Length: 261
Image (cartoon, rainbow, N blue to C red; front, side):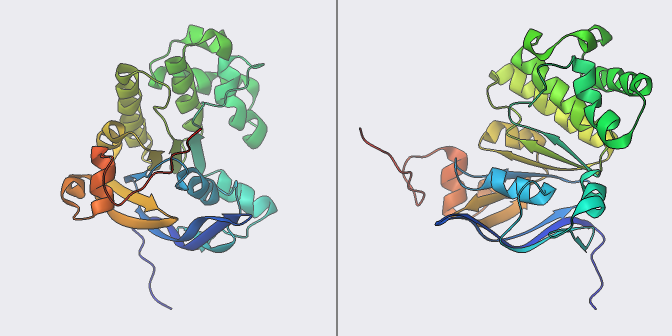
């Protein structure tokens, strides 16, 4: 048996996923280095979110493998699936907070429900994590509806890091935010990932955000990874699809479907 590369934290091998006749992932091959920050770029509907959900186990691939530390997690169920899930944190695109729960309980939800931490201890951890993302303890007693979009993103980030996960996934972390708040959230992502010592995978179509948070970038197009390299190399990738996307050019090999009324 070949020796496993211990520097590779996550690996996708030939991952495929279809919904009815539509193929979304068509043999994704990808390696993510431990404690690196990888950003997946690609147009709307290119399969970025589907790939993220296959990694964390929210969707089951039709084929291929998802390996975490060399372990094939693709078909795990029950306690084995829970064991793998406990290693992840995730910031959802809309923050996905529970409207009926105060902020501190949103942050501590996984600790209380998933790990059996007492409410008192969980609240202390939640307040600590809120402080890490620049929110005072008084915010803990507010409800999500009382928060701005940027504050909701911060709360979502605090929840993602509440259990000090090994791997954090970010789904369009700056969507819906103005440029200044987007830059603030990106800075928080960089600092919290560094402080936690986590491996990070983010998906975005916002190149300004990608440049701020990425060590490496991979581009998905038509269900495949068509380029993967360091952020320093992206402006000289030599790939016409990458070049068109990062510069937002209308003309190029990427043809967008435009529906006319």
